[in-house]
Length: 134
Ligand code: HEC
Image (cartoon, rainbow, N blue to C red; front, side):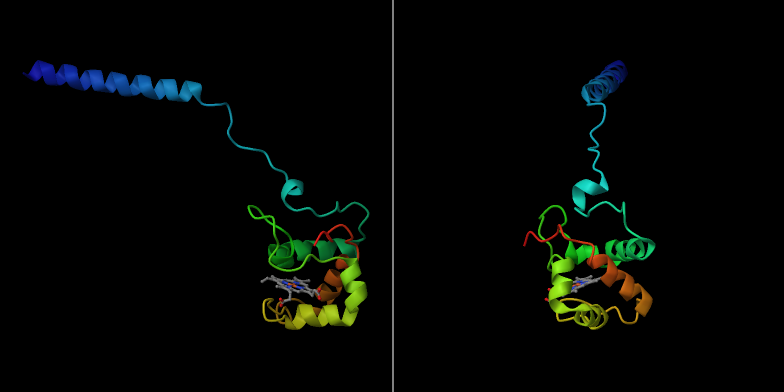
């Protein structure tokens, strides 16, 4: 009886090892899809931005893009897409107030961003002209 148990165990171990080997040999080399930030966040390149605009871009990506850029998987943004036409239409002061005070669906940043940082953001928004698909 014992010998059957040993044979049975040995067989099942051999089968599972074989199955695992087959699985790993049929696995494609890499399943990771390489996506660059450019695929996901359709922001224009930073080339040509001066230091204030670049500082504003960094803040925008960190603090605003979660709502103001479309994100996977829905490709729709929670907030409106922002660009220089919007800033020109509303005026710098209104845009600064919106950023500071927020609105029903947007938090205000007056306690978390300095006036200088808010200026950098406004300066950066004025460089955007491609995000006006909506
Ligand atoms: C939690 C999501 C969220 C975050 C984070 C956010 N916003 Fe907003 N924002 C909105 C929404 C939603 C609106 C539309 C107004 C509304 O519904 O309250 C808006 C409106 C605006 C407007 C007015 C646009 C217009 O057409 O008048 C500006 C300017 C703006 N946001 C700038 C910013 C900036 C700059 C940041 C980062 C510092 C930021 N927002 C962060 C959600 C957000």
